[in-house]
Image 1 (cartoon, rainbow, N blue to C red):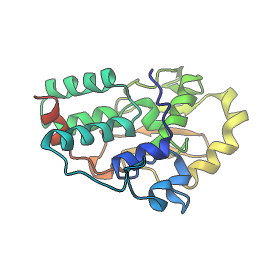
Image 2 (image 1 turned 180 degrees about the vertical axis):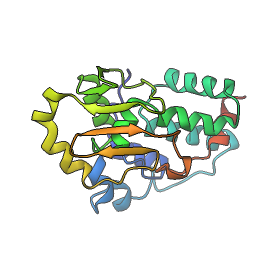
Image 3 (image 1 turned 30 degrees about the vertical axis):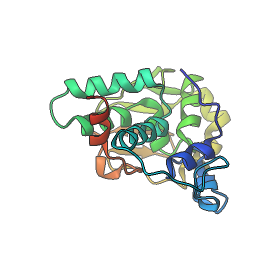
Image 4 (image 1 turned 90 degrees about the vertical axis):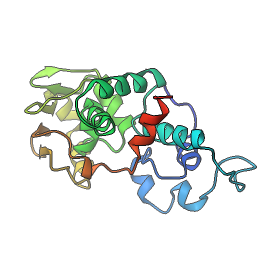
Length: 207
């Protein structure tokens, strides 16, 4: 998949909100957005009045960057959400929350989605007993995601230390001792960490 080469803190400053791209640093006083709450660059102190198009674009960019997706990937999720019965914006968020890398992150097994994506890509996780190294894999209700036995010996203490500091959403049940998590229901959108107006994103792609 595509990779952002831009500094992660610069991305948060560009969007004007914390996207939690750097794990624990985002919660600390070292967060760049807390220290310099303005746009990056020499003209960052001057904020122009945004057009309706720019407002929709920034909302789309914000959600896309939170989950670390390329434009083609993100557009595909939007098309799936449009074909899904119900509210398009809610369906979009549910698809994104069901990604394997996001489930690993939300379970507290990684400090950020980028780290979760790397762990999944390197084959450290099983889904229902089978090695799954595709970060975009969509989990279903009843699926069990766990750390491989070989990986538990190397990464177990580190993952437990990370998970001990992270709460788990209600739609997941975590077994910290066994380093596994079970998907109990559809993602609860009230527990999504970020505030994004998905209706603006749907309007952007409906132009």
